[in-house]
Amino acid sequence: MTARRRDEILAAARELFLRRGYAATSIADIAAAVGASKAAVFYHFKTKDSIAAELLESPSHAVTRLIERARERQLSPAQILTDYIEGAAETGALFIAFATDPSVADLIPQHDADAACRQIIELLAGPAPTPADRVRARAAFAVAQTVVSALQENGGLLDVEVRDEIRAAALRALGA
Image 1: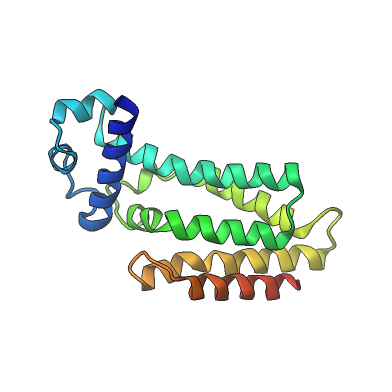
Image 2: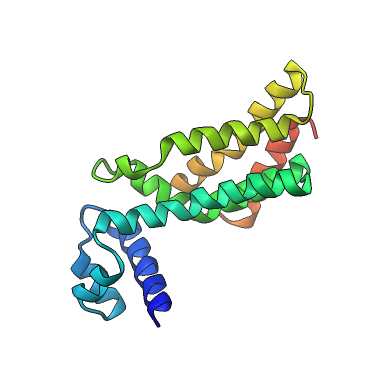
């Protein structure tokens, strides 16, 4: 029950943060959304910041896992781009909400994100890349990152057609 309750709290917090914003959401709001007391929420999380940090940690870990999978299984550039776009589409709305909210923007792990982006670009460029390979890899990744602006334009949701178009454009930039 404890792990399930923790997941319920995270899901409710995510929904409330997206709908109301971080600053406008209280621990009492989160507790009410899951039918629990504030004490029950505090049993699982010390602060509202710790809830936000955990919500942001999951997408960060997803990118790290993508990088590990790409190296272990030697994923194709097309698969790396597809997995990145799908993951960003699923989790990007929360990053957008937090990045535009000054009260919580400090919780976004920017250093880790920059390092992960460089690693993905290296994987897209391939082994022993030429300068042209590096340029195409950067361009393809830049196109893949348009998922974020597409999420902003579409209220945090992306349909399959938009995801497919972003992936196709990224693959064209890569020259694949």
